Length: 529
Image 1: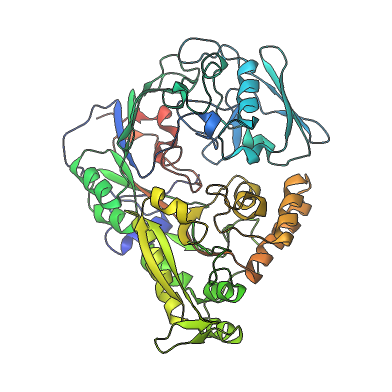
Image 2 (image 1 turned 90 degrees about the vertical axis):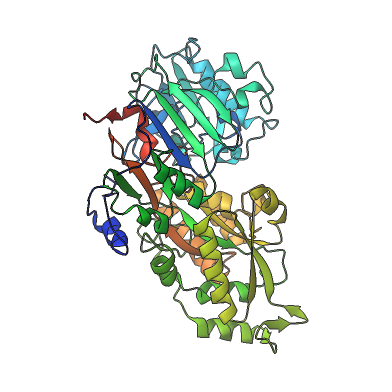
């Protein structure tokens, strides 16, 4: 099991407790909430609630189900399918038999036609789904009667079954609307354990239990996700009793030490924080600057001081404890070598210590999202380390609406990571054809060797061949980083101790909505008092 629970850890002992699994107990203030109601604080919200536009693409969307889902150990298990798929010998045909008797929350039956509709609509060029390249392997999807669907692939895409956790939309509702702007985008209908009751953008998303859910009506009848972007505000509302649970950075989670009726959950993750180094910038696009910054940063200090030990150094998108990680690609903290690299490349210190080459000052802005303490702390630490090497980094805070138009030329304290398969993270992060495509390849990274390796890994069904390809990618990132990966962070959640059932999974970057101790809220039971 991946869940680790900490109760009542105090001060610096919190980090040790998170790692060792030591438990104690904590006492929420504020009014008692009904036993069948839960309110959790999250940091972000989706742009749409339609799976046709990308909502819930990695599963666990509460309103919807996929053909498959993940258990606590992130192993695939059946959901709308009655079993795992039958896969042809050549790895190019996946056949799913569907669970019978399932209904959408409006009472209409779920059939294979809905599956075919969902995937065909996502792949339609007219659909504004930024993640459609993740389904590139699909050649066709065909409903064979009401209870069987067959996917035919262009090539033997090894992790395809992982892509079928994608939520299924009802054709009889979504098929009658404009896919990009219709009412389904904010008032969806699904087969999931919860039914949407309201969405006040920027404030909260509210759900009620689906009484006809095929998996049984949840005991938590009312579930609310409060959207609170600012970490301090989220902690304050949790302490006041307005929230039953919240995701918090380590320093704020530690503030609940001694609160004896709350638990702190620490989830291991693939979630990294990195600095994008835009290719189309005279400073960040210089390979020497990239190499220097990659070894100028003190990752161990960031883990110790910024995360209180709740994480690990990141030397690329793949965590060092993953079987996909390439040993030997760890970056040592070597500020003296960083200076030599810059010296040799012609970046010479000016009177103020900031380097200059051909009249260009080694200076660039670094944006982070307002209210996100972890990103702010990482940005400031990165800027400090860079300045010691003679590179001036000015940190700027803003919303994504402010940051997004600047991403092609300005550095961003970004994040990503997926535990399901290396293709899910590395392909959109590094493939040159996706440069400038929204939040894909934010740095505009362009490396033909990496492009070929990612394509080879994506199109091979041979695990050894895929491992070799990803080794190539990771070694190329040492030569020409494109991004400076800083840390992989644990996710910390503080939860009122009044339910049986909360636990955690190994989590991706996207968390709060589908991940967190409430990933299985439909199975929670109120504790007997």
